[in-house]
Amino acid sequence: MAAPSLGHLVLAHLLVALFGMGSWAAVNGIWVELPLVVKDLPEGWSLPSYLSVLVALGNLGLLVVTLWRRLAPNKGERVPIRVVQALNVLGTALLAPLWHHVSSVAGQPCSVAFLTLTLLLALACCASNVTFLPFLSHLPPLFLRSFFLGQGFSALLPCVLALAQGVGRLECPLATANGTLGLPHYFPERFSASSFFWTLTALLVTSAAAFQGLLLLSPSLLPPPSVPPGAPQAGPEDGEGEEVLPLQEPASQAADTMSSPEPEAHRLLSARGICLLGLLTVTNALTNGVLPAVQSFSCLPYGRLTYHLAVVLGSAANPLACFLAMGVLCRSLAGLAGLSLLGVLFGAYLVALAILSPCPPLVGTSAGIVLVVVSWVLCLGLFSYVKVAASSLLHGGGQQALLAAGVAIQVGSLLGAVTMFPPTSIYHVFHSREDCVDTCGS
Figure 1 (cartoon, rainbow, N blue to C red):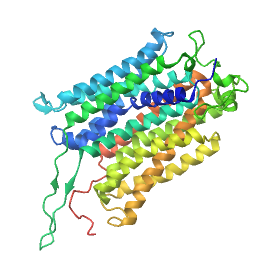
Figure 2: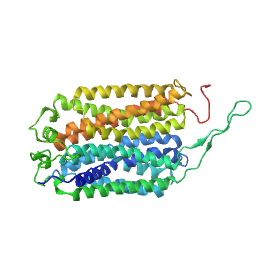
Figure 3: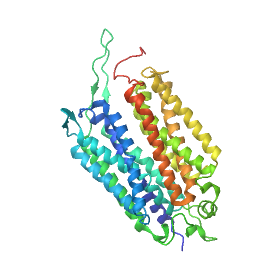
Figure 4: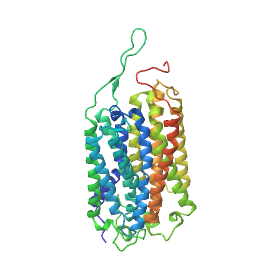
């Protein structure tokens, strides 16, 4: 089979990235829109804790996918992927007109529509990790990194959209003669939450269309139907003397990851395989559970600009780490463990800032702002790189290895969310700083 052209490969990588973008864009979009919707929903700022519980309940989607595999073991991943994409599009399309509707439950006002649709989207997003990743086992390993690049954009694009919307913009009035400040003045948003959810729906429709385009693009990117999942695949990299294009996996690496007869790195029950899955579990517990729960507490004492910079630049660190992994991939388990440890140190600093909120060290100084923003960027960038590298090394084990990677990612996210729920929502270990109030006497 002739090697695909460079244009063909670029288009394929673009479609894979757009496909990955649809994995968590819906739930990420709800998170960044919370500062706006809490003003109109009866739960107020209790909504983040409700959202954490709903995302945790979304892990029931894993059970649904497992049941599907039992009942239809030979049907592949295309049907559950289409179901996940349809639920994402349907959920966000219904959120646009219904998010502000309030119903009475046990005599108390409750945002039933918003919470129900959020649970639906959480189910779909959680199921995406165990359906999208196994599908990528049929493609060369480099496409896995493009997928994680797109998954990074599923966090970055909603953040950029919320910034363009102007969520959380305020102005603190000047101090009066006796040194007191008036109430903060909040600027109106440039467009409504409904418009935000309609735009998010359009992004998810684009992602679903990219998946269909990926299936139709070229038979050379997918194995013939008779090839079992995880089997060595015939492709452009198998031929000797053929040109290796910039977006094509080098032949030596392709042989290592796709053609080796049961290497130790690909056996899930080997020490190396278990360590890789453990790294995925720990890094996702921190990035999807622990750190999001403390981000506002660690950043807001330094100002809303600091918070927005940390959110946007931290989200941008994810796709940048994926770009780096496409060019330089660490294959050493010790190296990945070292990068993870470095990320944990930055994460520990951020958690310490959150515990000390509303008066963490260096509050009111430029050094404090730079430290917290740089820590968020490096922490999320390091963990994103480790996640991509570990998943790439597991790629050679085929569909089952990537399924295990998806389960590890989701289990880690669940453990992180469950761990942080008591200190944030029950014991209130962390305390926010009020807008335009100088609590620390700086």
